[in-house]
Image 1 (cartoon, rainbow, N blue to C red):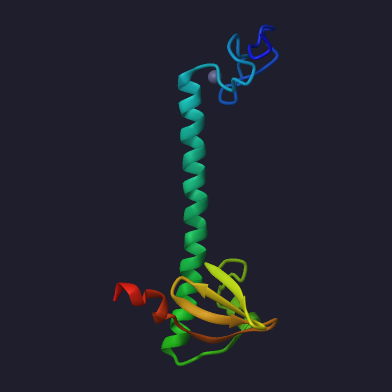
Image 2 (image 1 turned 135 degrees about the vertical axis):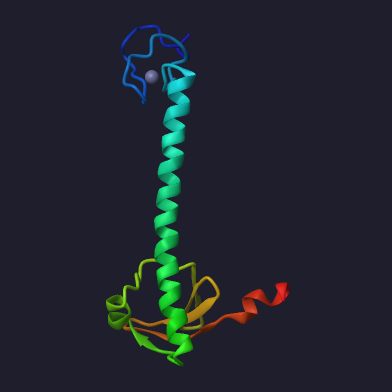
Length: 130
Ligand SMILES: [Zn+2]
C-alpha cells in the first residue's frame, strides 16, 4: 500500500511540474510523454557535456602533438596553459615508481609539479593493432 501514492498533489512531474495524480510513490513523471522528454533532454545535456570534454582533450592533444612535432619534450605547465592547455583533463594517469605517468590518448608524458616531461607518442599502447 505504501508503494502507491494516494494523496494527490504531494509529488510533481520532473518535466512539466504538474502534480502526479496517481501511481507508485516513486513515480517522477505525469506521463510517458514527460518521461521521454525529460530523458531526451538529459541525454542531449550529457552528450553536450561529453562533447565539451572531448573538445578540451582534443585541444590538449593538439598542443602536445605540435610540441612533439617541434621536438619539444618538456614544457612548463604555465606555458601550456597560456597556449590553451587545460591541466584538469587527461585520459589516464598512474604512478610508476616515483613518477606520475599520464596520457592524453596516445601521447604520454610525465607530470611534475611545474611541468610535463618526456612528452612523446605512446606507440606501445597501439602495438596490438599495428
Ligand atoms: Zn509531466
